[in-house]
Structure formats: structure tokens, C-alpha cells
Image (cartoon, rainbow, N blue to C red; front, side):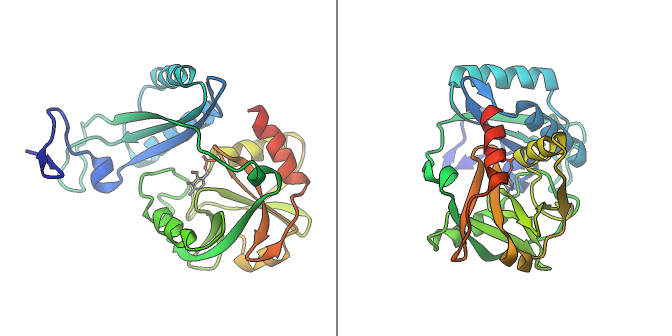
Amino acid sequence: MLWIDGAAAPPGVTLDRGLEFGDGLFETIAVHDGRGRLLRRHLARLATGCARLGIPAPDPAALAAELEAAARLQGSGVLKLIVTRGAGGHGYAPDAGAASRRWLAALPPRPRATSAATAGVAARVLATRLAEQPLLAGLKHLNRLEQVLARRELAATAADEGLLQDGHGRLVCGTMTNVFAVLDRRLVTPALERAGVAGVMRAALLDAWRGVGTEVEVRDVDMRELAAATELFLTNALIGAWPVADLDGRALAPGPYVRAAQAWADGW
Ligand SMILES: Cc1ncc(COP(=O)(O)O)c(C=O)c1O
């Protein structure tokens, strides 16, 4: 028997390892003009995540067709895809034969002030630190309590996004974004081998810059280096790229790199 909020669960509703343990992955896909933006990259990251966690991956062609149909139906908004290891197993130990399960939600577009992309946003360095776990680093897995706590911390400030560091004072990412900075005239983004989500927008931008011969340093970034950043911007699949106009009270101007990123992202 299963009860939800005191009432017997409807037939067919069971526990799921995604709910029990965060044993799964998700993708948040921007939909414009009936098309999922960066859809191939979302599908590739999901497949990589399934392989790394040993979750049976949904059939790629069927999943792509499902997402394309949902995007056409939706027109514009956000598609949230969740793939879990499904039900069963003995506690944490998964059932080797269990099939994965997937949920797809069509959500309305997220309202954003247009000034976020044009004038930029305010960012704060948060006190919440991210744990280092190379086995999970880069994946968009369902264990997001760190981000939930970080968003609670951010909500007590007037800033739009919070920057997060690991236990060694290295910049990892924003609460919902990847970070690029211009340091000593070089474009830099933190390496994500120990913590963080390897964003599809980050990956697409890295490829775009490499395609035009611009070197981007992917490396450990000490948080203190940001004091000398001449440009700072945030990326994700839904926002594209936002310049940071204020970092802990220090004014920064949107620069040429974020404008290039926005021009690319608008075309994807
Ligand atoms: C913690 C975190 N880092 C990075 C990103 C950016 O990932 P993507 O470009 O795939 O949206 C997200 C997106 O939600 C995120 O939640």
C-alpha cells in the first residue's frame, strides 16, 4: 500500500527511485517557435548521464521524436524531462533488471526582465559551498539540495544570481548557471571535474568560440581572481547569457564576449 498525504495512492502510482534517492537525471529545455533549443546536446548529456550512473537510457530516436512533438505542440516555453532508475531494488541497491521511467512536463515560459540580458544582473558570492564528488560532477542529476539551499540563501539578498565555490575556494558555478569570466584578457570558465553541472549552453559556447579560433581556458578558478575580472557572465539553456553588472557591489560593464554569446544563443 502507498499513501500520499494520508490518502491511498491512485492505482498504478508507485514509489520511484528518483523521488526516494534522487536516483535520476533531468534536462530543462528551452522551446522557441516549436523547436527545442540545443535539443541534440540535451539528449547527448542525458545519454552520458545514464551511462555514467548505469541507468538504462530511453531509446534515443523515440525520445527525440517525443520531445520534438511536445515542442511543436507547445510552441514556446520550457520542456522539463526527468529520467529515473524507476521503481524497486532493496533500499539503495538498485534492481538490475528494472526499466527506467521518464516524465515530460511542458511548462510556461519563465518570465524574465529584459534588462537581465541587456543591462545585466546583480550577483553575490554565497556562503553555501558545493561538495566535491567527481563521480557526479558534470551530470544534471536529481540531487539538487545544494542548489535549493543556495537559492534560499540568495532569496534573502537583492541579487539575481549567487556564485558558488567548493570547499577549497574555487569558483564552480551559479545556482542555476555556468560562469565565464575575462581574467587577464583571457576568457575563462571553471573546470567541472569535481563539482557542478556541465551546461549545454556552456558546451555550445565553448564549441562556438573554438570554431572561430578563440581560445577559452577551462581551468580551476580561485574565487579571489574574480576581483580582477573585466567581464563576467552567466549562461544556461533558458537564459542564454546574462552579463553580470554588479558583483558584490562592484560595477562591471557587459563586454564583447557576452554580446557574442548572446548573438549565438539567439540563433540556436
Ligand atoms: C547548477 C547548474 N549549473 C549549470 C546550469 C546550466 O546548464 P544548462 O546550460 O544545461 O542549462 C544549470 C541549469 O539549470 C544548473 O542548474
